[in-house]
Image (cartoon, rainbow over all chains, first blue to last red; front, side):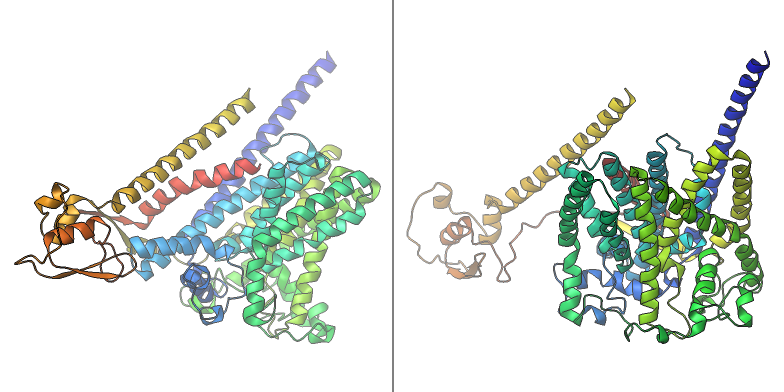
Length: 481
Length: 144
């Protein structure tokens, strides 16, 4: 009787926990949707990093790439000329259609800006769902309402800034999630593939290369993984598959880089002078946080404090808003709200964000242990995730050291957002395993993460007033018959 | 069963899209065909009239016609010919000399009616995403 009661009790408890999980997922998801919609109405893309230059890119997109390409070099149109075009294709197409059929330049800027935020928001939500699918593949069981993905990957403040601005990084996250999904599927099929798979992966590689140069940091991981795979048969198939799809990727994307080479003499042309890699390019404080201002990461984590100190700035920009692009950029100093209080609030954000940061670190350690313990299909994938995280971080550091900026202006979490998502994936897997092993510790983590999510919620949102321009523009649709 | 239904839905979607694009392409082709035709109305518009001999397919010598104002006709390559009678003009236009000197094809003036309405940003964006969202969604479903 006792057994029967306990079984009955356990069943009820599990059922109850499942329901709780689903409701929590619903609430978190609605919260994320709310933030995305709120930012849509309260953020003008021109307020983002180099907003004018990105708008100039969009406005001149078809002068640079269209069939009636201008003979002028792209640098004459925008100083963002070195950025690959894919992130601008959607708004530029909307702009072209708008200017031809609907309205004037000013109204079209509002039109494509508004719809580009919607586009990037949709891609971001799809990215989260693809992560859920990836975890399902790894765990081997269906779980559509995975709260770990929302709590660990949906919580980064940098996500929402990236989505609100004109940035190719949103595309990197999207295409990379798709590529990882295909990759793990192929691994589970021992690289038995169809031509369609080759084509899709090739196009994904090409699309990544055409989104932003940071995506190139995701490719070496696939090469290094080759040395980790000990099963000769899989290794052979793996090499053949990635070699062929890389050629498709190269054909898709190389034209842009070849064009850069012919116009500016380098495949990696940039709008800052490269002075070569030397550790001495950056001061010691860049590598090792020092000085009295370091403590301000947890008291006033906004510029210009702890200037050009890599880890403090990156941490503050990941969880908070170090550069103030959601509050007090120089372009909108007069309208950003809560400017006096934001420093104190972001300090609390940074303190509580130590919890998910700790989970990211634990996730990495757990993954390393798993990989060392045994060789398996899942571990091949996890090895790739770790390799790409390391390469992304090293590559970004290499960039910062080769292009030093005394103010540390190029230390922005957006540029390396893929790194945080990769680390987040390892933590999600850690939580999935913890759920089976130690329920109590797992529950503590979940409660803490929910608290962090609630506390950081305001940091995810724009602090600018309602964008009135959205209500002022009109579009005339006319046709002849 | 569910998977079968899903596949069926997916196939139906692509079937509808394929049919839609075939119809679009066909209509486009039809328009192009009809716009290349030289109709009697176009000949009359360019030459001012259609002569009885041309109408009844009777050969006649090309002599200047009294009262006919000399006019230039152009072909697609920009070659020019001066015609001095209605009959001569009819023959040339029927043969494809129906272009302006700029290379643009001469069109019959039509009774153009313009319809228009104003939309605000939200209405036009809604229209846009009603089309785009299913497209993005189904493209993604193809990969996953």
